[in-house]
Length: 243
DNA sequence: CCATTAAATTCAA
DNA sequence: TTGAATTTAATGG
Image (cartoon, rainbow, N blue to C red; front, side):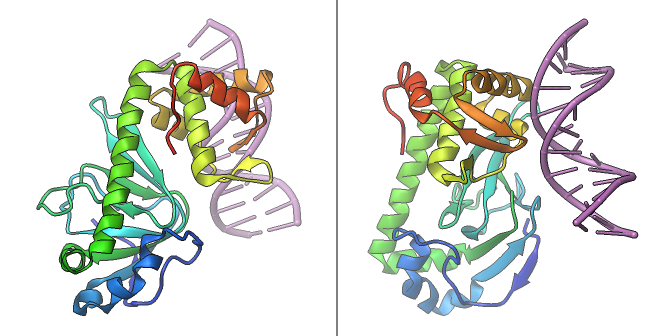
């Protein structure tokens, strides 16, 4: 299901990103020169709006232009499991692309978000004609797959504390920090849903880490004080950190 | 897991 | 900009 205001514009790569690997920026000409470019639209979602519903049919995919998005799946007990967080330049809704499948994930805007939507037909046609774009897309898929495989491992083999630390490092790596705080405000529940734990456990691990002076926290703003120590704790049981 | 209190965010006047 | 209303954090049972 797609909700949100739809603008009929063909303008624009990612507004915010300077990323030299940005798929949209690098393939701007190709993506917008096709005769099917009319079918691509920019849509905006407000904070908290869900723009992909689990179970809805897939008929295209989204490039995230600005803002951040959480991608989740509902587990057996009705528990929300956060699959990943997406930042600008990333693709959302690609699982099931190429088939008549349904989305197995939901996606919700964590902040106001701009999305560029491409229909399946447009993408397929464009990919056929452009090996470089296809290659870059493949790299994206490969990275995603690698990451989710690592995540399975970490959830099954790491302690709660390690998983929470791992999540902190993931956010740090992906979103960086701003005036000493992680540049993405998340609730403890969201950390829990990403780490595969409960809110209480996250709160308790955070409290312990605060006592140990490894992190600091003011509400949703988390500061990392000693990233080396945190990394070390993970690497004791996990010999690599994914990028 | 739930209940309580403290703290932080949001919202609208 | 403020503070009341709502949501979120933290702790202890």
